[in-house]
Amino acid sequence: DGGITQSPKYLFRKEGQNVTLSCEQNLNHDAMYWYRQDPGQGLRLIYYSQIVNDFQKGDIAEGYSVSREKKESFPLTVTSAQKNPTAFYLCASSDSGVYGYTFGSGTRLTVV
Amino acid sequence: EDQVTQSPEALRLQEGESSSLNCSYTVSGLRGLFWYRQDPGKGPEFLFTLYSAGEEKEKERLKATLTKKESFLHITAPKPEDSATYLCAVQALDSNYQLIWGAGTKLIIKP
Image (cartoon, rainbow over all chains, first blue to last red; front, side):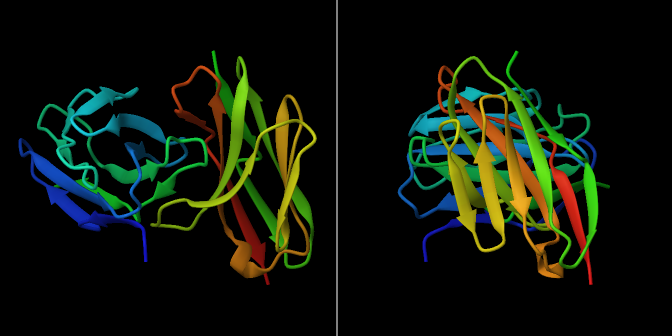
């Protein structure tokens, strides 16, 4: 079945560490997105990519980095510069965005 | 500024008690309005896309409607399994396909 796979489901980060969240899709979608979700708030866009080897910052890109070397993959790195990284991270993809997004099951990141 | 506001923040209903969720939006030009369902600890699941005022879409006990300023998600005779957070998002014509999200309505259906 086609879909988006995010891993790991749970991730714990120590202070000062960089961690990478994986996102892989087999839907042949051109566009991919990373969102952060905090309780009581709407989804906030971190980064998005509409084509391989190209990506743009979203509303809250500081402290995060991404790469898009393959159409299927869009990993997100949470760097030590992100001061409040504890959140639920969602990856999504779309076929040009016109028909809505397909989401992965999310990664919950906790700082310990 | 483009904005989406959902109300109420939370809604508790008895099983079988019909109601509506509201999504108000301000956007320069609407390309589409999207409704999603999200269960705890999971990613949002796509429900509907609406493109123009007057449009309606149905799926089981859910019906989404659209006006020039807001959308309603009507739930008829809900069951406990309809309990979830319902998210609304809009896509503006000049948005490069980005979505603007509301904070969601948490729906709880009591048996």
